[in-house]
Length: 96
Length: 481
Image (cartoon, rainbow over the protein chains, first blue to last red):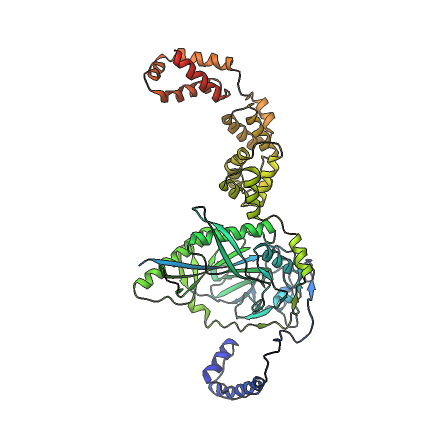
């Protein structure tokens, strides 16, 4: 299966990546071969196999509904690239 | 051409748990900005979400209450989208294998008929944060993010497209809210956003069975806006089709100030959520015991309560409906009944004065200055003819003001009804003697003047005369006069 350049641009947009024309062509080839490689699995008959939802055979990892403050009220700021008016500050996301 | 509207609702309700769905931060409302956050809900690298068991119990609870089938195996998925209200870049939700499938609830239409609205599914997910844009808080080129709400547990309840008008949509949401409140899974405070609703709306020619293209209307945070937004959207689509246009599938935002819906197309570029099972969360298995434990904890639900009120207390459907809309009001009613008053009389007072008082003052029934016992005593005073219904109104006002019990008020103010007919007779004679003109007119055929005479007697006795006795005596005396 061969991806189109349009496919690559779409994936890049969803991943918030900006690709040059050269990169788009380069990744088109690489992504296509990855998909072909994974595609070999389609040769197997999986009709009687339960779909896997998790790699671990674990079930029911819970916590009880208990509220606990583990971090200081101000600690959210420590990794924020930008803050303002007591909030995280980001580029404006909707226009007027 | 005539059109039929087709509406399905997606309702999000915040659960009133102590902690968030995947971390131990408080799920409460109104904390300092970003104070209720930790690496898990901030989406820091290496964090590991762990499911709050109580959220699952509440999902099961709602599912059982609306007759859904509870999935014995259920999984969480990542819904990927890029927006600053969601620091991980994805929302943990359920896609395949949600906790509940199917079920439905019944609404009562204005003509009294019932309609069952089927549910598609109910699933668990985390809420996103809150954004404030530009000058509303600070710099015009910035948005500001408060992540306290990120990770607060939500149940999303999806209906089948079986609603046919904005009125039905409103009734459905009201019923769902009632059930959620009865169950105590959510406080359903619409102003604080704990009950939110999106509507999928389409129109089709009347009689057709092929649905038109739907638009999703978002941002309706009150019952009034829900109805107005849906009505606007139905009109918009019909006008568009009549002009030869086509409806496009898109999200539209309701603007309550202008009462219009606005396309969000420019903002949502290529919805592609790329759902996949979240590797951070293991499979959820719900045992039969767990389901049975939750089933045993279910309270009496609104429909069952309404039927019981009609059968046990001989209340009309309307009364039973109003009283059972809120569990607190229903409890108030049954508490008042314990004093021995007649159910229908107590119901009348609740539907009238008590609901007015608590709505005007935004109180819960439990906070009402007139306690159920006080109301019950008031009704008993009317029933044993100590006071008239009219005087009872005065006593009610006084109870509201002073919080004193009705017997004390009646004694203090000397409001005991005069049922002694000789005392009333004196007043009746006086009125007849002093008003020969009216008496002549009455005898000449103006029989409606009887009301005026009754009024005069009531005035003279400061409302304390028993109106039945007054009427009887007046008629008798006027005929002889």
